[in-house]
Amino acid sequence: MSGRVALVTGAGGGIGRAVARQFALAGAKVVVHYRTAAAGAGAVVRAIEDDGGEAFAVGADLGREDECRRLVQAAAERFGRLDALVNNAGLQPTQDLAGMELADWRAVVDTNLSSVFSCTQAAAAVMRGQGGGSVTHIASIEGTRPARRHAHYASSKAAIIMHARAAALEYGEAGIRVNSVSPGLIDRDGLAEDWPEGVERWQRAAPLGRLGRATDVANACVFLASPLAAWISGHDLVVDGGVSARPTW
Ligand SMILES: NC(=O)c1ccc[n+]([C@@H]2O[C@H](COP(=O)([O-])OP(=O)(O)OC[C@H]3O[C@@H](n4cnc5c(N)ncnc54)[C@H](OP(=O)(O)O)[C@@H]3O)[C@@H](O)[C@H]2O)c1
Image (cartoon, rainbow, N blue to C red; front, side, top):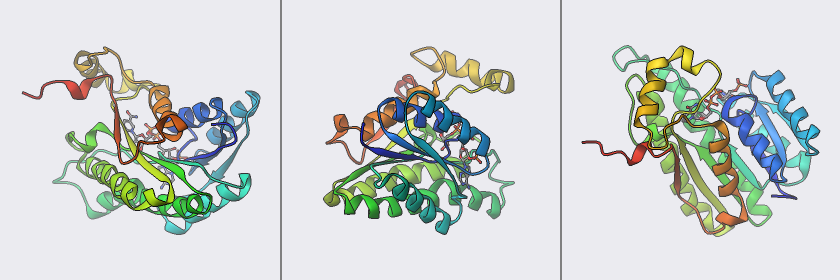
């Protein structure tokens, strides 16, 4: 990825932080987006610089279309081009359907789906002018198999899997590839304490016997953005330790 520029949304912590770090380790210059996690994003930039890479942080509320456009513009201007966008930012609240208000639904759809539409459109305009690029959405295995109390989330993730395919169809002639990555349950600090029964169920269900790591997702993103994936577009890459391979009956 050397000489290439990657923009990772929601990279002040969690999976996005690992995606930003792995792109930098693969040689890319990285634009680290955050909404509230300014300190986290600053730490990611410093870690990349300490490793000899180049990065800078930009704040934006991706629930707003103008902010999506401003973010992509800032990224392209800082390093003079944009080769890879990873749409990672997302909300994951839980609420049952009966108690869900339209505002709850809209908050998730605006952040998880509409921001993907807007950021991709803005990035594709830049990529078209430079002869191509790659966009990867972070979806979820819930985009194909729902979980309880997550109807808004699962619907938004199903929609971005389809958005990736539709965008692959329309942007392909400009040399722009669009894919999604669907992670299973990814480990984070405090997960085992917060949700012990979920972690235990996952470990029992996973053929590979463990939770995912943020780097498992990040490596899939780097692969899809790299020349190794030059003929891959409109694909949903499931990164779930084999859980989706289990029989459902
Ligand atoms: N963790 C999992 O097991 C798992 C599994 C499958 C899929 N995923 C997906 O992977 C992605 C990252 O998840 P994560 O677990 O790393 O979650 P996380 O730590 O909560 O990160 C979510 C990120 O989204 C950003 N964000 C939220 N609303 C935003 C908005 N309106 N504008 C801009 N940024 C916004 C947050 O930014 P700030 O913190 O700066 O506010 C944060 O960096 C999400 O799309 C999630 O759905 C996660």
